[in-house]
Amino acid sequence: MSAAPFIEAASPHVMNTYGRVPIALSHGQGCRVWDVNGKQYLDALGGIAVNTLGHNHPQLVPALQDQLSKLIHTSNYYHIPNQEVLAKKLVELSGMSNVFFCSTGLEANEAALKLARKFGHDKGIERPEIVVYEKAFHGRSIATLSATGNPKIQAGFGPLVEGFIRVPLNNMDSLRAATLNNPNVVAVFFEAIQGEGGVHAMHLDYLQAVRQLCDERDWLLMIDEVQCGMGRTGKWFAHQWAGITPDVMPLAKGLGSGVPIGAVVAGPKAANIFQVGNHGTTFGGNPLAMRAGVETIRIMEEEGLLANAAQVGAHLAGALAQALKTELAAGSVKEIRGQGLMLGVELAKPCAALVGQCASNGLLISVTADSVIRLVPPLILSRAEADEIVGILCPLIKKHIAEQA
Image (cartoon, rainbow, N blue to C red; front, side, top):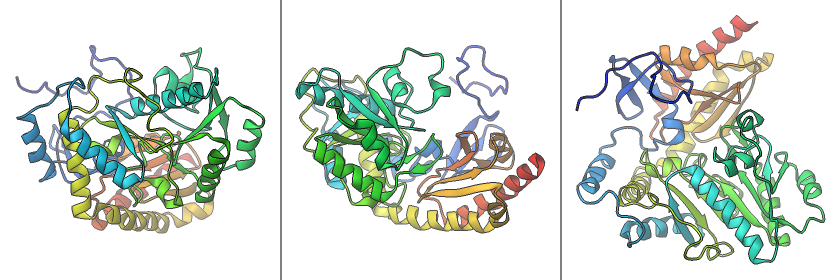
């Protein structure tokens, strides 16, 4: 069956849940993609931090083709050898101890919330409570939506799940005050660098202080690395810059370079909370996804992509700051922040229109939190491609600011 023709109008048969850019992509190579009309784009979005190895990687594609010819899915009634291979590698990279595999970041975060609740129940706490954060995003299921800190996406889906205590970022006094004399608290849950919330990072000293507090109070430290993990910041996991290890770490996105995959990595404190029958998944840990994860990490190590993410990311951030120095001084660009190849450029006013304008000029980006341009390209991005991003994006930012003045 041939591919369906591209129609710019919204499909009458697909639910209208996305504000799509009116292009349909056909194929890709490296950090570039082409639409069905032959127009080329530089991909600075990477499938929203998913396409770690870019597109059509010469080692990944044959490996996946090989796996497709053997087994795609069997179910978790049977042992799947590459689950153990990938789990062992994630344990090695994280310093943790056990892994549960699922298919998405939402599922990984949902499993983390279940782990925290059962951790509490096992200690005799009937109504466990979990500390979560302002501006957080953990998913769109009812439970992860409740943990998320965005009233706009929560609207219309109440009643939300109870058992969450919300605090501001990077404020230990607020965390201590919100949990004072509360015996029901079982965990603290946050993104090391918020993605959807606007590329806001937890400070390294704050991460260390929360780790210490969790140890003192016998709470689980649960760090959502779904978007900021898998080498994006220049270390395997963003929290590693603080020299700490969480008790629970959800992963997804970049772990499979585009093949749907999620994981929950647990340290000794959480590794044995789930027992047979407590949690499960149909598609999680399937042979294709496991092969994708194993090959992604192997290729990342062979190609030095953590160092590349750190070096090219620093170059990109510096080039953006230089190109936008007038706007930064004037306050029309508020901040350039992030780490490695997870960067946010915050404007003083909403800038969603830049998504379409950049696409028209051959650059794929996203805008999150209304006014933050998010750049999460493949980790194979070169310095020349970083300069190309700056060359397309910054004139459009300047033009947008001038039009809003």
